[in-house]
Length: 401
Figure (cartoon, rainbow, N blue to C red):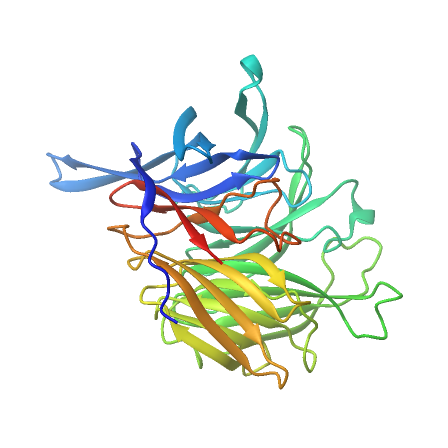
């Protein structure tokens, strides 16, 4: 069957290029958008071009029935926004990674006339060199860090353009300290585009005692996917347990940069997790994160696969509905299926191609809020929000799944 080719119900244009966006888990009819504006000025004396990166956070209201989009608030920032993610437990909090090597935490709270507003909580430098952008941020699962070592510790991992990856512990209040608990130096000075954090039962026999396998996955601009596994048991004073395994597939399976990593919520096979990966090489892959790595299925999506979002798991973990932002090719809705003989298939359900530049950010409206559509098997039509960078376009469109 040919993929659906939906048309936009609404198209608007922002005042700045959108780099990331996410619907608000606590308020489904609101969207937070991060922007990245590159300004250039010429220095007449030196005949050189000076570049300045600024941005904003924008809060928009979505009318799902009328397909309307209305700007509620714009918060100008002295740096560009590279990435944005809501806190996995506190739905009012979100954090951003910035072009000035910092991470900032914000809260969405009721403002005047009960209209929500974005309020800054804290900003913390996460690299000693402010010229090194923080490219991506991932919150850690609730049990990933040892919260007994510090009260109410949240965790997040950050990647940088110089190849470094760091893990931090932090609180959610304005006076809470942000502390680096792990740093993984670059093997090569190259962008690490993505970091994903996984938490799995270490074996079927160990789930009762709570032992977990903790993983950190990163993807770099050379096509390498790096897997780090940490010890399941933690010492009392350690926020991050020691490394147990540390290996890189050395770009054996991706012919360009790895730009998206999505751990699948299924049991490990042969001690290694199963992932979906996206790459500049335009392919979506089902990937077994063994020491050498193994591709179990792949399909070309027509554009660089920049972001992947798991919308819901279906049929007891055998099917996965995924939204992909595919750079110059627009957005895709795909279904990934695991067969009875452990064979995998990837089906493209829909292609949205109205965007005329890089589609870096997409999401779907969740009628009941939350982070995804898990358990909402009766939702057979998606209302999607997608963006494109250089033409500053924001589109609403619907697709049947």
